[in-house]
Length: 154
Image 1 (cartoon, rainbow, N blue to C red):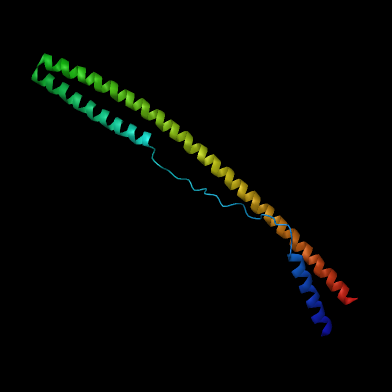
Image 2: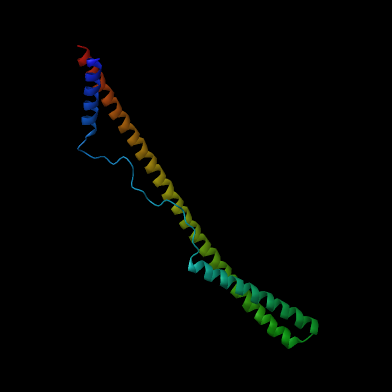
């Protein structure tokens, strides 16, 4: 009975002293915000508003041209056609700018996705290293316990 108690005391003492490691290892990576956020940029909303306005003006100009054609008024038809051409030009410009902004936004989203994937890979690697370090420590403790048990048996 004394041997069993003594062996438990020795094992406990070895375990307690082996856990007091003076060097500190960072086993978990620093917590970082890896959430993907989608925010509407002011540029995007401005271009969307410009695009919607251009669509409205284009539709109004088409309606005026049609109305002038129905009335048979040549002067009104020419003015409406000029307004239609100007609205069409504005619409085309807004559409091109909107596509440019959409492309830039798409690239930014893709870059953010890649950065997030890199951070996830780094975190997985850190977890793997921590797991290996823990397994090594467990093996050391197991060996120390076996040595203590062998010494107690002798």
